[in-house]
Length: 280
Ligand SMILES: [Zn+2]
Image 1 (tube, protein in one colour):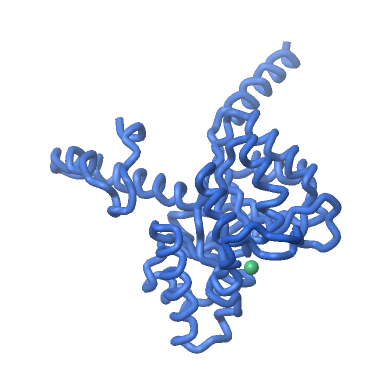
Image 2: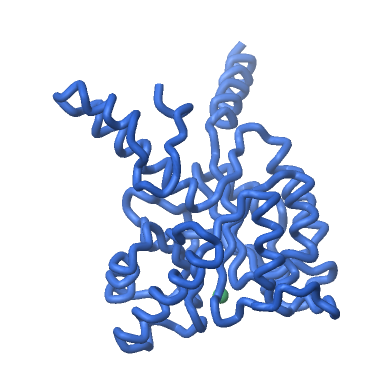
């Protein structure tokens, strides 16, 4: 009898545990061509959004189709635009020159933050709200300048679960390296409500630590798509969801009944239309 009860409790616990909705963000740093060559066909097949960290000095400005298919090159504007036409691709700034910001003077840090945002905003026609620290390096001065440059989020390479309430400018990740297994990733997703997976390059036969196997990537996308407790999203969408939650909480606690009505009518930050399905 005790045994049966224990089994029942275990089954119930597993059901509750797996019913919790998890958010997973796939983040690609540096915008390598290999993401277009090997990742894009699979992302299209599974309709999976990503956040792409672009270094504006490295952004290949050639719009022409490339002659050689070296995956170590960077994507060109035409390729990124093509991905954006077919998928939800958030463009994040990964600075102008990928220098370690901690070692720069204030005016240089400002340039890295502001000029890259200006370039990306004008090429892609929408506000860039996420900054990705080169080498994951930051300090308090850098964080303050990121805020001043009008970014809403910043992502580091610290290991762990990202938390927008306490660390909107130091978002943590699970980095995917050559030796990372799918089980390791699934385990991380199962133990955290939100997961940001950090990738660099994809390769059929990974050679360096920043490459991950295309076959593994395919298997991961299949896993993400076939588990309906997983919501695959972008950092930008995470930010908007967080704004909604925060504003809704404020509205519910407000003594003024109009507050909620007003909230339902307005666009949160005038950058895109509020998703009405979230407001009940
Ligand atoms: Zn980088």
